[in-house]
Amino acid sequence: MSEPLTQSEGVELNMTPLIDCVFLLLIFFMVTTVFTSSAGLKIELPDAENWQKIRETKMNLSIDDDGRMELNGKVVTKNSLVGVLLDEKRRTGTITLIIKADKDSAHEYTLDAMEIAKEVGIETISLAVERDDVQITSLKKRAGTDAP
Image 1 (cartoon, rainbow, N blue to C red):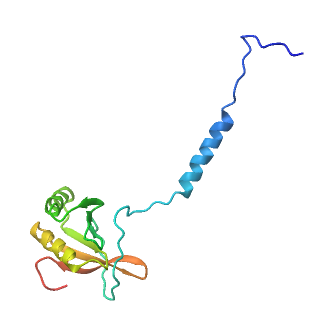
Image 2 (image 1 turned 45 degrees about the horizontal axis):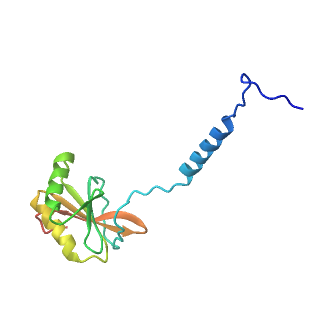
Image 3 (image 1 turned 180 degrees about the vertical axis):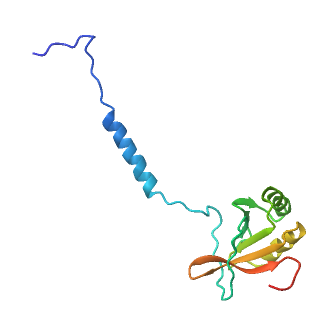
């Protein structure tokens, strides 16, 4: 028969295999997680034949087909857009705005955003389009001029 355990003898649980399993699960989930850059509105950009790629992309305004707007990932309304654009302009020092409007959105939303951007002193307004499944910007326009 076995002798009963005394208080000086104890049962130890080896934690090493448990920690190994936790690290393996952590690595598995880190590798299989999909990271997306646009967590907000689902936008389908229109196609364009004439386009120009713009390198400076500090202020991005997304407009979905229902007219909801996001400026650099922050949800804004038409009424609050003036204040938010001014704050971003002061914070970043950029005078360029790229508008990503859904191809099914009403032109009214895009035109309203362009007028508001002109009012706050945005000098360059660009519209984003898609070509060959690559997002690019198109129609580089100096605010206040008629030439594209």
